[in-house]
Length: 73
Image (cartoon, rainbow, N blue to C red; front, side, top):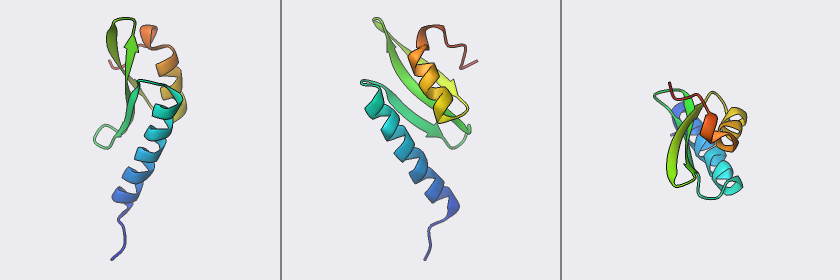
């Protein structure tokens, strides 16, 4: 029995999210299968901020600029 494309894409998303978490200490990242967006919880000073992005590159920008990031809407 083969792996479905959903399971394969989920595994790829987990791999990319894990890489982002290694790059940014303390960040929790994931790909939302239902939303089709990339997400991360980022510590901003003494608070936490949820950021959303369309791809992993943009998620890295969102993490770096979390304080002023306009998403999620």
